[in-house]
Image 1 (cartoon, rainbow, N blue to C red):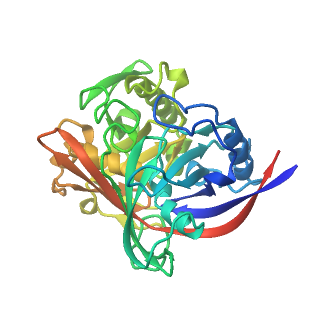
Image 2 (cartoon, rainbow, N blue to C red):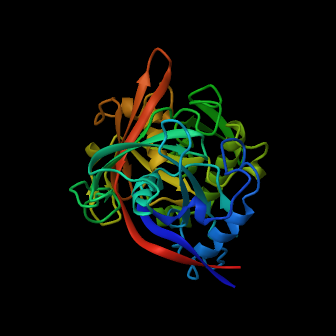
Length: 390
Protein backbone atom coordinates (compact mmCIF):
# COMPACT_ATOMS: atom_id res chain seq x y z
CA UNK A 1 0.00 0.00 0.00
CA UNK A 2 1.28 3.47 -0.91
CA UNK A 3 1.27 6.25 1.68
CA UNK A 4 2.09 9.86 0.88
CA UNK A 5 4.06 11.82 3.45
CA UNK A 6 4.82 15.55 3.40
CA UNK A 7 8.51 16.11 2.73
CA UNK A 8 11.00 18.31 0.93
CA UNK A 9 14.09 17.40 -1.10
CA UNK A 10 16.95 19.69 -0.11
CA UNK A 11 20.57 20.18 -1.08
CA UNK A 12 22.60 21.10 1.95
CA UNK A 13 26.27 21.76 1.23
CA UNK A 14 27.61 18.87 -0.85
CA UNK A 15 24.86 16.46 0.19
CA UNK A 16 21.18 15.99 -0.62
CA UNK A 17 18.41 14.43 1.41
CA UNK A 18 14.75 14.23 2.34
CA UNK A 19 13.57 16.56 5.10
CA UNK A 20 10.49 15.78 7.17
CA UNK A 21 8.50 17.67 9.74
CA UNK A 22 8.52 15.57 12.90
CA UNK A 23 4.73 15.82 13.15
CA UNK A 24 4.40 14.19 9.71
CA UNK A 25 6.01 11.01 11.04
CA UNK A 26 4.95 8.40 13.61
CA UNK A 27 5.67 9.44 17.19
CA UNK A 28 8.59 7.63 18.78
CA UNK A 29 8.97 6.99 22.49
CA UNK A 30 12.18 9.01 22.21
CA UNK A 31 14.11 10.32 19.24
CA UNK A 32 17.63 9.07 18.54
CA UNK A 33 19.96 10.74 20.98
CA UNK A 34 23.58 10.84 22.16
CA UNK A 35 25.22 7.72 23.52
CA UNK A 36 26.29 4.35 22.16
CA UNK A 37 23.13 3.95 20.08
CA UNK A 38 19.66 5.38 19.42
CA UNK A 39 17.37 5.74 22.41
CA UNK A 40 14.29 3.56 22.04
CA UNK A 41 13.11 1.92 18.86
CA UNK A 42 13.25 3.76 15.56
CA UNK A 43 11.75 1.01 13.40
CA UNK A 44 8.69 3.10 12.48
CA UNK A 45 10.96 5.82 11.08
CA UNK A 46 13.44 3.39 9.55
CA UNK A 47 10.83 1.70 7.36
CA UNK A 48 9.63 5.06 6.03
CA UNK A 49 13.11 6.39 5.32
CA UNK A 50 14.32 3.22 3.59
CA UNK A 51 11.23 3.03 1.37
CA UNK A 52 11.38 6.74 0.49
CA UNK A 53 15.06 6.59 -0.49
CA UNK A 54 14.93 3.20 -2.22
CA UNK A 55 16.84 0.96 0.17
CA UNK A 56 17.82 -1.81 0.21
CA UNK A 57 19.22 -1.88 -3.32
CA UNK A 58 21.68 -4.63 -4.24
CA UNK A 59 22.47 -2.72 -7.43
CA UNK A 60 23.63 0.30 -5.42
CA UNK A 61 21.58 2.89 -7.30
CA UNK A 62 18.37 3.40 -5.26
CA UNK A 63 16.43 3.78 -8.49
CA UNK A 64 13.14 2.99 -6.77
CA UNK A 65 13.50 5.90 -4.37
CA UNK A 66 14.88 9.38 -3.90
CA UNK A 67 18.40 8.28 -2.95
CA UNK A 68 21.38 8.64 -5.24
CA UNK A 69 23.30 5.43 -4.57
CA UNK A 70 26.11 7.01 -2.48
CA UNK A 71 26.26 8.01 1.17
CA UNK A 72 26.12 11.77 0.53
CA UNK A 73 22.84 11.32 -1.39
CA UNK A 74 21.15 8.86 0.98
CA UNK A 75 20.24 10.97 3.98
CA UNK A 76 17.23 12.26 5.92
CA UNK A 77 16.53 15.04 8.38
CA UNK A 78 13.62 15.30 10.82
CA UNK A 79 12.89 18.83 12.05
CA UNK A 80 10.60 20.30 14.70
CA UNK A 81 10.15 23.48 16.68
CA UNK A 82 12.09 23.26 19.93
CA UNK A 83 10.74 23.44 23.46
CA UNK A 84 14.24 24.07 24.80
CA UNK A 85 14.92 27.53 26.20
CA UNK A 86 16.80 29.69 23.72
CA UNK A 87 16.63 27.06 20.96
CA UNK A 88 14.65 27.53 17.74
CA UNK A 89 14.70 24.03 16.23
CA UNK A 90 15.43 20.42 17.11
CA UNK A 91 16.64 18.13 14.36
CA UNK A 92 17.62 14.50 13.91
CA UNK A 93 19.88 13.16 11.16
CA UNK A 94 19.56 9.68 9.67
CA UNK A 95 22.08 8.03 7.34
CA UNK A 96 20.22 5.49 5.18
CA UNK A 97 22.27 2.52 4.05
CA UNK A 98 22.14 1.97 0.29
CA UNK A 99 22.50 -1.81 0.16
CA UNK A 100 20.64 -2.70 3.36
CA UNK A 101 17.38 -1.67 5.02
CA UNK A 102 19.13 0.17 7.84
CA UNK A 103 19.32 3.71 9.18
CA UNK A 104 22.22 4.92 11.33
CA UNK A 105 21.64 7.76 13.79
CA UNK A 106 25.09 7.70 15.38
CA UNK A 107 26.30 11.07 14.10
CA UNK A 108 25.34 14.47 12.75
CA UNK A 109 25.72 15.75 9.17
CA UNK A 110 27.26 19.19 8.79
CA UNK A 111 26.30 19.54 5.15
CA UNK A 112 22.62 18.77 5.66
CA UNK A 113 22.61 20.88 8.83
CA UNK A 114 22.86 23.89 6.52
CA UNK A 115 19.46 22.97 5.03
CA UNK A 116 17.57 22.71 8.33
CA UNK A 117 16.62 26.39 8.62
CA UNK A 118 15.75 26.82 4.90
CA UNK A 119 13.46 23.79 5.22
CA UNK A 120 11.94 24.99 8.50
CA UNK A 121 11.12 28.36 6.95
CA UNK A 122 9.49 26.93 3.83
CA UNK A 123 7.64 24.30 5.92
CA UNK A 124 6.41 27.08 8.23
CA UNK A 125 7.88 25.49 11.34
CA UNK A 126 9.40 28.88 12.15
CA UNK A 127 9.15 32.36 10.67
CA UNK A 128 11.54 35.29 10.50
CA UNK A 129 11.61 38.86 9.26
CA UNK A 130 13.88 39.74 6.36
CA UNK A 131 17.55 40.23 7.11
CA UNK A 132 20.47 38.34 8.61
CA UNK A 133 19.53 36.00 11.46
CA UNK A 134 21.33 33.48 13.64
CA UNK A 135 19.13 30.53 14.55
CA UNK A 136 20.04 28.15 17.37
CA UNK A 137 19.52 24.45 16.66
CA UNK A 138 19.73 21.37 18.88
CA UNK A 139 20.98 18.19 17.24
CA UNK A 140 19.46 15.16 18.97
CA UNK A 141 22.08 12.74 17.58
CA UNK A 142 24.92 14.41 19.44
CA UNK A 143 23.14 16.45 22.09
CA UNK A 144 25.01 19.51 20.79
CA UNK A 145 23.96 23.01 19.80
CA UNK A 146 24.52 24.40 16.31
CA UNK A 147 24.18 28.08 15.37
CA UNK A 148 23.11 28.76 11.78
CA UNK A 149 23.50 32.22 10.30
CA UNK A 150 21.75 33.15 7.06
CA UNK A 151 19.85 35.89 5.26
CA UNK A 152 16.05 35.79 5.04
CA UNK A 153 14.36 37.34 1.98
CA UNK A 154 10.57 37.41 1.67
CA UNK A 155 10.29 35.02 4.59
CA UNK A 156 12.54 32.37 3.03
CA UNK A 157 16.24 31.60 3.21
CA UNK A 158 18.12 33.55 0.56
CA UNK A 159 19.43 31.40 -2.29
CA UNK A 160 21.18 33.87 -4.61
CA UNK A 161 24.68 35.01 -3.73
CA UNK A 162 28.31 35.05 -4.82
CA UNK A 163 29.66 32.41 -2.42
CA UNK A 164 31.34 29.50 -4.21
CA UNK A 165 31.05 26.17 -2.46
CA UNK A 166 33.62 23.58 -3.48
CA UNK A 167 31.88 20.65 -5.17
CA UNK A 168 28.69 22.55 -6.09
CA UNK A 169 28.26 24.29 -9.45
CA UNK A 170 27.55 28.00 -9.50
CA UNK A 171 27.28 30.30 -6.50
CA UNK A 172 24.82 30.83 -3.68
CA UNK A 173 24.01 32.72 -0.51
CA UNK A 174 26.43 31.84 2.31
CA UNK A 175 25.17 29.95 5.34
CA UNK A 176 27.44 29.96 8.37
CA UNK A 177 27.50 26.93 10.64
CA UNK A 178 28.98 27.45 14.09
CA UNK A 179 29.39 24.62 16.58
CA UNK A 180 29.87 26.46 19.90
CA UNK A 181 30.92 23.37 21.89
CA UNK A 182 32.16 20.78 19.40
CA UNK A 183 34.38 18.64 21.62
CA UNK A 184 33.08 15.18 22.45
CA UNK A 185 30.13 15.02 20.03
CA UNK A 186 29.73 11.26 20.61
CA UNK A 187 32.67 10.35 22.83
CA UNK A 188 34.24 11.37 26.13
CA UNK A 189 35.94 14.46 24.74
CA UNK A 190 38.14 16.12 22.16
CA UNK A 191 40.72 13.34 22.43
CA UNK A 192 38.65 10.29 23.36
CA UNK A 193 41.71 8.19 24.27
CA UNK A 194 43.52 11.04 26.02
CA UNK A 195 46.42 11.26 23.56
CA UNK A 196 46.89 13.11 20.27
CA UNK A 197 48.53 10.21 18.43
CA UNK A 198 48.83 6.47 18.98
CA UNK A 199 49.20 3.17 17.14
CA UNK A 200 46.58 0.65 16.04
CA UNK A 201 47.29 -2.87 14.79
CA UNK A 202 45.76 -3.42 11.36
CA UNK A 203 46.33 -6.76 9.65
CA UNK A 204 49.49 -7.33 11.66
CA UNK A 205 51.00 -3.88 11.04
CA UNK A 206 51.06 -0.92 13.41
CA UNK A 207 49.53 2.33 12.12
CA UNK A 208 50.06 5.74 13.71
CA UNK A 209 46.71 7.54 13.89
CA UNK A 210 45.03 10.48 15.58
CA UNK A 211 41.54 10.04 16.99
CA UNK A 212 39.70 13.34 17.42
CA UNK A 213 36.08 14.16 18.20
CA UNK A 214 35.08 17.74 17.45
CA UNK A 215 31.58 17.90 15.91
CA UNK A 216 32.28 14.39 14.55
CA UNK A 217 34.49 11.46 15.64
CA UNK A 218 37.27 11.04 13.07
CA UNK A 219 40.28 8.75 12.89
CA UNK A 220 43.12 10.39 10.95
CA UNK A 221 45.71 8.26 9.16
CA UNK A 222 48.64 9.17 6.85
CA UNK A 223 47.94 8.11 3.27
CA UNK A 224 51.28 6.34 2.89
CA UNK A 225 50.47 4.02 5.79
CA UNK A 226 47.68 2.38 3.81
CA UNK A 227 49.46 2.32 0.46
CA UNK A 228 48.01 5.53 -0.99
CA UNK A 229 49.51 8.80 -2.20
CA UNK A 230 46.58 10.74 -0.76
CA UNK A 231 45.81 12.61 -3.98
CA UNK A 232 43.88 9.79 -5.70
CA UNK A 233 40.38 10.23 -7.07
CA UNK A 234 37.52 8.84 -4.97
CA UNK A 235 36.87 6.19 -7.63
CA UNK A 236 40.45 4.91 -7.59
CA UNK A 237 40.51 4.68 -3.79
CA UNK A 238 37.19 2.81 -3.72
CA UNK A 239 38.54 0.39 -6.36
CA UNK A 240 41.66 -0.34 -4.28
CA UNK A 241 40.34 -3.30 -2.31
CA UNK A 242 43.52 -3.78 -0.27
CA UNK A 243 43.45 -0.20 1.01
CA UNK A 244 39.69 -0.09 1.59
CA UNK A 245 39.82 -3.29 3.66
CA UNK A 246 42.59 -1.79 5.81
CA UNK A 247 40.64 1.45 6.18
CA UNK A 248 37.53 -0.39 7.38
CA UNK A 249 39.48 -2.54 9.85
CA UNK A 250 41.21 0.59 11.12
CA UNK A 251 37.87 2.39 11.43
CA UNK A 252 36.24 -0.41 13.41
CA UNK A 253 39.16 -0.81 15.80
CA UNK A 254 39.29 2.96 16.30
CA UNK A 255 35.57 2.92 17.12
CA UNK A 256 36.31 0.61 20.04
CA UNK A 257 39.21 2.78 21.24
CA UNK A 258 37.00 5.87 21.05
CA UNK A 259 34.29 4.24 23.16
CA UNK A 260 31.70 4.12 20.38
CA UNK A 261 31.18 0.35 20.67
CA UNK A 262 32.38 -2.68 22.56
CA UNK A 263 33.77 -4.66 19.63
CA UNK A 264 34.86 -3.97 16.04
CA UNK A 265 31.91 -6.01 14.77
CA UNK A 266 29.42 -3.65 16.44
CA UNK A 267 30.97 -0.40 15.19
CA UNK A 268 28.43 2.20 13.98
CA UNK A 269 28.31 2.81 10.25
CA UNK A 270 28.40 6.60 10.36
CA UNK A 271 31.15 7.13 12.94
CA UNK A 272 34.01 7.34 13.16
CA UNK A 273 34.83 8.55 9.69
CA UNK A 274 38.35 8.06 8.36
CA UNK A 275 40.44 10.97 7.10
CA UNK A 276 43.32 9.87 4.86
CA UNK A 277 45.74 12.81 4.85
CA UNK A 278 49.01 13.87 3.28
CA UNK A 279 51.15 16.97 2.86
CA UNK A 280 50.13 19.61 0.29
CA UNK A 281 51.01 18.67 -3.27
CA UNK A 282 49.62 19.43 -6.75
CA UNK A 283 46.34 17.54 -7.05
CA UNK A 284 44.11 16.87 -10.06
CA UNK A 285 40.52 17.73 -9.18
CA UNK A 286 37.31 16.11 -10.35
CA UNK A 287 36.73 18.88 -12.90
CA UNK A 288 40.15 18.23 -14.46
CA UNK A 289 41.88 21.33 -13.08
CA UNK A 290 44.93 21.24 -10.84
CA UNK A 291 45.03 22.40 -7.23
CA UNK A 292 48.46 23.88 -6.49
CA UNK A 293 50.32 22.72 -3.40
CA UNK A 294 50.41 26.28 -2.06
CA UNK A 295 46.60 26.51 -2.10
CA UNK A 296 45.97 23.95 0.66
CA UNK A 297 47.35 23.19 4.12
CA UNK A 298 46.63 19.47 4.06
CA UNK A 299 45.27 17.11 1.38
CA UNK A 300 42.44 14.89 2.60
CA UNK A 301 40.34 12.02 1.34
CA UNK A 302 37.47 11.32 3.74
CA UNK A 303 35.89 7.87 3.88
CA UNK A 304 32.19 7.78 4.78
CA UNK A 305 30.00 4.67 4.82
CA UNK A 306 32.72 2.73 2.97
CA UNK A 307 32.97 5.26 0.14
CA UNK A 308 35.36 8.13 -0.53
CA UNK A 309 33.61 11.49 -0.29
CA UNK A 310 33.85 13.63 -3.42
CA UNK A 311 34.46 16.70 -1.26
CA UNK A 312 34.42 16.44 2.54
CA UNK A 313 31.65 16.11 5.17
CA UNK A 314 31.05 19.44 6.87
CA UNK A 315 31.46 18.06 10.38
CA UNK A 316 34.55 16.19 9.18
CA UNK A 317 36.08 19.42 7.92
CA UNK A 318 35.51 21.07 11.28
CA UNK A 319 37.03 18.11 13.09
CA UNK A 320 40.17 18.36 10.96
CA UNK A 321 40.33 22.09 11.69
CA UNK A 322 40.18 21.21 15.38
CA UNK A 323 42.87 18.55 14.97
CA UNK A 324 45.11 21.19 13.39
CA UNK A 325 45.04 23.08 16.71
CA UNK A 326 46.11 20.11 18.83
CA UNK A 327 49.84 19.61 19.22
CA UNK A 328 50.94 16.11 18.32
CA UNK A 329 48.14 15.16 15.94
CA UNK A 330 48.98 14.02 12.43
CA UNK A 331 47.25 17.07 10.91
CA UNK A 332 49.10 19.43 13.26
CA UNK A 333 52.40 17.86 12.18
CA UNK A 334 51.64 18.17 8.48
CA UNK A 335 50.70 21.84 8.76
CA UNK A 336 53.66 22.82 10.91
CA UNK A 337 56.12 21.06 8.59
CA UNK A 338 54.71 22.57 5.41
CA UNK A 339 56.43 25.54 3.78
CA UNK A 340 53.08 26.62 2.32
CA UNK A 341 51.01 26.71 5.52
CA UNK A 342 50.65 29.40 8.15
CA UNK A 343 49.23 27.92 11.38
CA UNK A 344 46.05 29.64 12.50
CA UNK A 345 42.34 29.04 13.20
CA UNK A 346 41.53 28.51 9.50
CA UNK A 347 42.60 25.33 7.74
CA UNK A 348 42.47 24.85 3.96
CA UNK A 349 41.61 21.28 3.11
CA UNK A 350 42.53 20.01 -0.35
CA UNK A 351 39.64 17.72 -1.32
CA UNK A 352 38.83 15.92 -4.61
CA UNK A 353 36.59 18.87 -5.55
CA UNK A 354 38.85 21.71 -4.43
CA UNK A 355 39.65 23.66 -1.27
CA UNK A 356 37.30 23.62 1.72
CA UNK A 357 38.13 26.05 4.51
CA UNK A 358 37.06 25.33 8.09
CA UNK A 359 37.94 27.07 11.35
CA UNK A 360 38.43 26.06 14.96
CA UNK A 361 39.13 28.17 18.05
CA UNK A 362 41.66 26.79 20.53
CA UNK A 363 41.44 27.80 24.20
CA UNK A 364 44.92 27.41 25.67
CA UNK A 365 43.72 27.75 29.26
CA UNK A 366 41.13 24.99 28.90
CA UNK A 367 43.24 22.97 26.44
CA UNK A 368 40.28 22.40 24.17
CA UNK A 369 38.51 23.64 21.07
CA UNK A 370 35.67 25.94 22.07
CA UNK A 371 34.13 26.53 18.63
CA UNK A 372 34.31 25.28 15.06
CA UNK A 373 32.75 26.75 11.94
CA UNK A 374 32.48 26.71 8.17
CA UNK A 375 30.34 28.17 5.39
CA UNK A 376 27.92 26.17 3.22
CA UNK A 377 25.10 26.93 0.79
CA UNK A 378 21.72 25.21 0.60
CA UNK A 379 18.65 25.12 -1.62
CA UNK A 380 15.22 23.56 -1.28
CA UNK A 381 14.87 21.61 -4.54
CA UNK A 382 11.34 20.27 -4.15
CA UNK A 383 8.50 20.18 -1.66
CA UNK A 384 5.39 18.06 -1.68
CA UNK A 385 4.83 14.44 -0.72
CA UNK A 386 7.04 11.37 -1.03
CA UNK A 387 5.63 7.89 -1.72
CA UNK A 388 6.24 5.25 0.95
CA UNK A 389 5.32 1.60 0.49
CA UNK A 390 4.12 -0.53 3.39
